[in-house]
Image 1: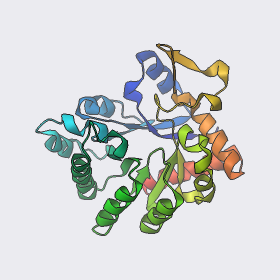
Image 2 (image 1 turned 90 degrees about the vertical axis):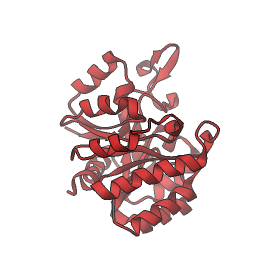
Image 3 (image 1 turned 180 degrees about the horizontal axis):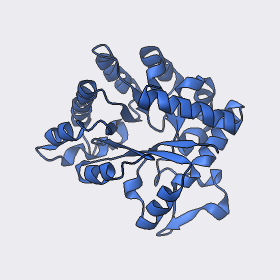
Length: 262
């Protein structure tokens, strides 16, 4: 049976019913990302053979930190089962999250990644060059592994990151990543070893990629469910002109290399 890996999602944000249904599904592994201090404990509590927890401060929430956030993060990261995410930079949210503060918090968490040998799950919106510059500083200190969440960066930055990290970086493709024509060339050019896929559930649904009878709504809005990962797989396979089974096998290999050194 085909195994899929949802390389970036937020299971803690699902309704109890949706979470229960998701965890009953036996063919998918989930990399579950926290966004702020308030959901760290919940994300860690979801840890299982099917769920890898990642905790950190999302760039949208850098203005609402407690004085002890970094100390608490230090403590949690001593757990070998916990990775880092979702962290990064978002230039579209600078009004609620000042750029300098975003960068400061991002750097603090990258330092912890080096200290604790953690995989880093990175959010990057309209800050591609800046994120690459910062990562270059830290990769010079020590090798570490990076997952670029819902990647929409241009090929110029993508290729630069590939030169920096080689097999230690994967670019995670979401519905949004693969639905935009301007990004198709990047999806095509990426090597097999540098791709993973994600839902970012419950966010980032592209309803045109989902069978209409399968779309579910909450409060009148379409919600992205982890079970829709199959549609990301289908679309990436079509763009890259390969079979879904071959792609799924390669994605599993990439996941194992990044998270388990396999």
